[in-house]
Length: 145
Image 1 (cartoon, rainbow, N blue to C red):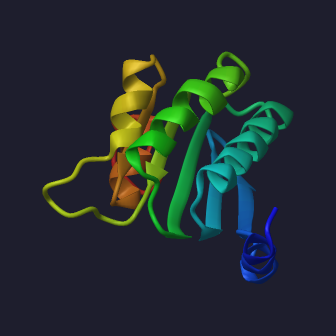
Image 2: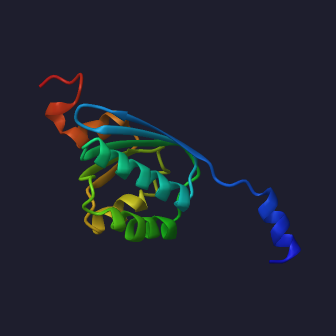
Image 3: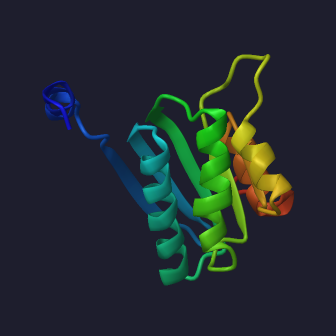
């Protein structure tokens, strides 16, 4: 490695992230913050998957509105085809993700790739809609049956 790369690596901060997990009766809630990179998201996915197995939860609600940045098309595809794939069949059957709204001309590519690969995953910009989809309309807390 040349001296310029050494200096760049020395001053470039490593991505950080935090996650808070809360176990609810019918699902697990995971709230993430920090910097959004493929590596960070992959580590979050692994930690969430391990917690769902440990707590016997098949449904997960993941709030990533506090993650800074966005994943690009290639990172999203890699995340699903490599990182999600190795976790297939190991706990999570249904996942709802809450994220910041995107510009109207873009869609959540991660959702499209995930569904095309057979994962039961949807992305929402509204927590109520995410929970309603995750639990089904009859099981949403505070909603009349």
